[in-house]
Amino acid sequence: MNYVYMLRCADGSLYCGWTTDPEARLRAHNSGRGAKYTRSRLPVELVYQEAFEDRHEALSREWHLKRLSHAEKAALIALQSHRCAGSGSDASTGASPEAATGKDLRNSAGPVS
Image (cartoon, rainbow, N blue to C red; front, side):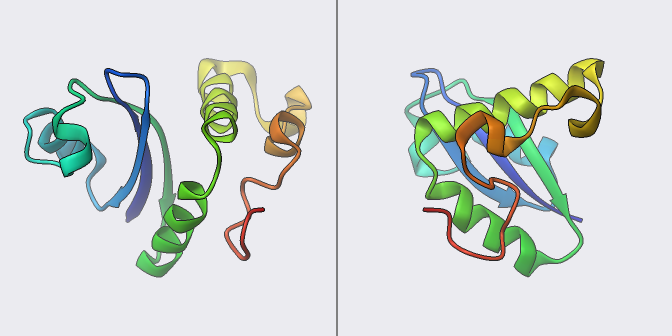
């Protein structure tokens, strides 16, 4: 399995990456062995992740997520947190990434503008 993830850094910034093991990657980031960006912004916390069967799909999704604004990323994180809190799926809550930001944040087939 391949994962795209976002970390919230101690300074409030967001870092996006991909991995095959999110928990090990989080430990690497927090021990200072992760990305150079996160080393000076410790500690970091995992705030978002998506799973993909194919590495290419995960890398494509990472590329698209990195092009979102901070506010769009925050909306996506909030939407996933809302779902994980047991509030149901998009269909049952009426919530969608589009409603949160006005953009299709789930689509990795094309650029998000």
